[in-house]
Image (cartoon, rainbow over all chains, first blue to last red):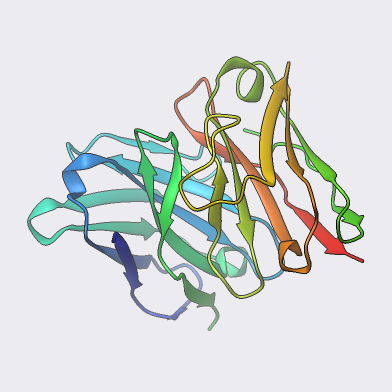
Length: 118
Length: 110
C-alpha cells in the first residue's frame, strides 16, 4: 500500500520560507509525478505544483515565483519550499501521488497544518 | 489559472440522485479527458472517486459516476446515503501542463 507522510514545522514567521518534506513508501518514487496541494482553513483545495523523479517540475502560475519543489530519490522523498510567506499561506499542506496511469491524485498524505504567524 | 466552477452546495434525500457540475474552459475540462473527482470528509484527506472523466478506481461504489459535455464535467451520485455527505472537488489537467481544482461543493444528505 502506498503511503505518504508530510513533515516539517507547523509554525512559520511571515516573510520566511516554509519547508516541508514528503516521505513515500510502498511505491517507487520513480514511477509517478508527485504533487503538493494545500487547503486554507474552511476553503477549497489548491494545487501548488508537481515534480517528476527526473526533476522536471510544473507550478501553479499564481505561486510560481515563490515555489520550489525538489526530489531526493535515494530517500524516496520530495520537498516543498515556499518563500516570503504571509498569513494567506496558512493551510493544511498535502502531498499526493499524481498517477501517470490514472491521471489523478490517487494517494494522499494525511496533511500537515502550517500556520504563518509571528 | 482560474479555479473550475462548482456549485457551493447541493442536497438530496436518501435514495435520491444528485449531480454536481464542474465548469472550466477548452484549455482544461473541455480539452482533455483528464478530469477527476475527490470526496473529502471533515478533517480527512481527499479520496479519489472518479478519474479520466468517468472511470472508478477499485473499491469505489458504482453509485458514483462521471461524465463530460463540452467544458462541463459532472459527478452523479445515485441512491444517496448518509455517508455520502461530504465535500466534493473536481480537478483537471490544463493546456499549460498544470493541474487545477474546482472550488468544491458541499453535499448535504437531508
